[in-house]
Length: 151
Image (tube, rainbow, N blue to C red; front, side, top):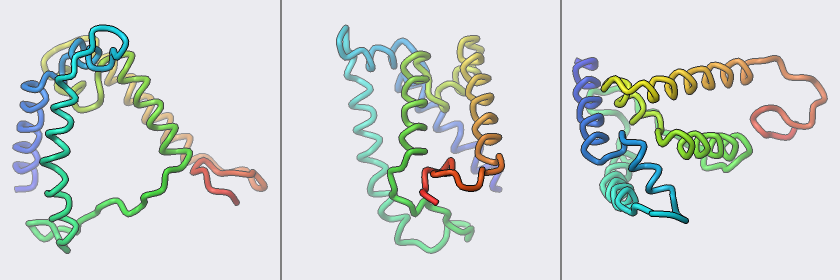
């Protein structure tokens, strides 16, 4: 049943990305082109997504378990640290260069868009490099570890 629920959620999410234009890098790059021919339509999409998600997240935070009884694993940290900032910068650069973020890129790969495949492969390589970097042994006496916490 979990696999069916995940499949349905993924199909709805993918359809939403297609209908909204998020899977079209030209539309996304138009939104990011503030100095040129800016396309504000994705700003309305993002605002609508926040308006729908905010009350749902508020409701979920009041629950102890998911609908089917599984534990809710919600993030608890609100810290803005070096790792978060670096990840945000890398994400933004990738989004601005390619016009894709991870979800829409996977949808575009499913549609057979070759540049999206290149993006997804590069994204997976980047994730693997980060995982390797994050697991490497720490040097004793270093001022900071990779999580940005002072020792």
